[in-house]
Image (cartoon, rainbow, N blue to C red; front, side):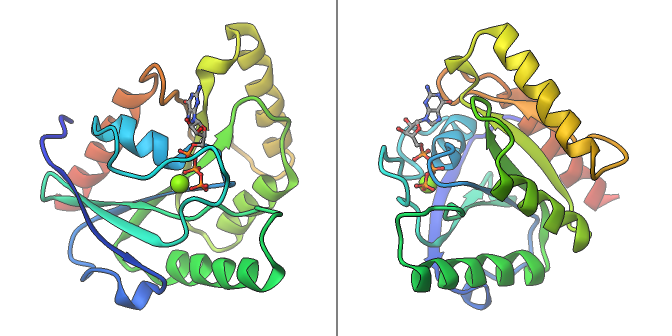
Length: 200
Ligand code: GTP
Ligand code: MG
């Protein structure tokens, strides 16, 4: 898929106020600072479409972007961010959970995982929650440029082994880098396939 048009539409704190759910939607979620906003900019080829930051907790709302006038891409706040108060954390979690459970046009959620880290409990729990709720998802391993090929390979193997303790099959995974553009074609192709399946 070639992205010819990418535009920010609106930010919301509540899924009920999100744009009318009349076109397919794909959301990007993951721990704070994992690289969600950077990946969205890489995929759309727009440097500053989604706001990025060195400080975790930059994205605080449900942000809708419309792509090629044909589907929504959604940038979500990070979870597992320790440096905010418990009450704000609770509010964010509730907002995310409501959005993920009730957004009717949400086709798939891309769960982003930092390639450099050992499997983190918050990620594993989050992935299990998707399983419990039967919500479709794919894993995107981020910041691949920061690792050697061999470290990346062993890290991902370890991740798969951890997931296989709970899953019969390893979830669909794509390796990405916002810096080098790795994974761009694969992610966009996957979205294109899902969009065309909906039309059948
Ligand atoms: P929150 O909105 O705070 O939850 O963060 P986020 O997940 O949207 O992360 P963001 O895209 O803002 O990126 C966090 C930091 O990681 C920034 O300093 C980015 O420049 C850096 N970063 C993101 N992706 C990559 C990548 O693929 N490679 C490298 N080298 N750095 C990256
Ligand atoms: Mg962000």
